Length: 133
Image (cartoon, rainbow, N blue to C red; front, side):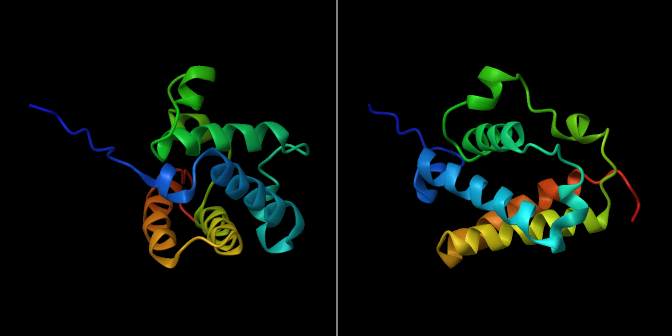
């Protein structure tokens, strides 16, 4: 009897694999770096976004069901713990979300996939909040 294994989070392949995830991350950080609407979240990052780009790419690849790049390089994500040194409130969460939504739209993700990812991203972004406002 054959056993069928279903990936619990197939977004990695639906997005288009490694190249598409990298494209999403690069668009996200390009927008964050260029658009003053995202200044609040941009100032939480180092001036050089290279390492931030890599970490988000590694994390999203794994989180979306692709290769375990983050775990192999850094270890368990422990996202909330890793973000505790930064003051993250509603404004930062909303700026991060707006930037990611715009990045997804600009790279041309299908509306259905954008909606699915938006819900998942919001849960994660809201969980990162460590400030009441």
